[in-house]
Length: 282
Image (cartoon, rainbow, N blue to C red; front, side, top):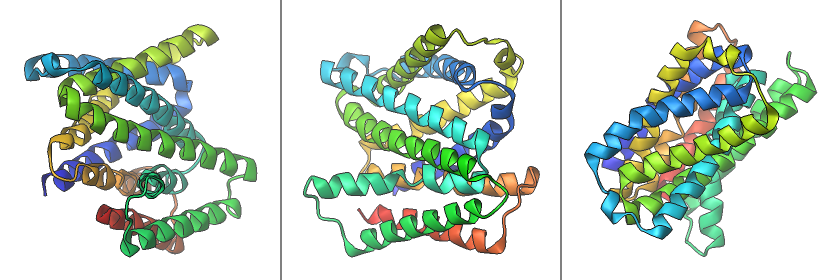
């Protein structure tokens, strides 16, 4: 199914993106990093959106939804960056990647029928995240850092759920390319206001412009792939499969950054992402 393939490709790209995030977040404040990543993403997406067209079909409601999607994306990315900066990927990735669980809950609250397999997936995610967090609480991380990483990761999950849900609604009315770019511009505007209010220095982040530019391109390409699924059957499949990005990041961090992952933690993480995968039955 095209939606599944788009989501899997986005997961691979985001996994690489988050691996780079793990290396740059300890070296500068979150807001300047976000500013340069979002700015490079906008520069990458602008010519693509202009060539692709679709601006003539942009409605006021699609514009509003795109802006709201961008606000959700700003919150999600800020949460993800902070969580990765203070917590190991094996803790952050399962929680941040569990946003399809929120989609399932929203669907149930709206009266949509949720199958037994989907609820089993939700149960696997909740149990797995609890076990991962418990492993970290008794490990080398202090309880305060573990709680902070969990909180920021939860913010990322909520933000991603809102980002993709709103973006798919907007793209059905206003076209994929305009919605993708407008959401990114809205997120960038939030970060600019944040920086202006706090007067945060940009110099440390500017020294990292090369990896940040790469992150912006990767991030822009991945979110464009997920939003592009709006024109396919079952577009939510793309958002669900894209949430597997955490497994890619965990493998890369274990291989290249020597982040230790014990066998029981591998088992728990795999259970979480199997649970995420079953939510494709929504």
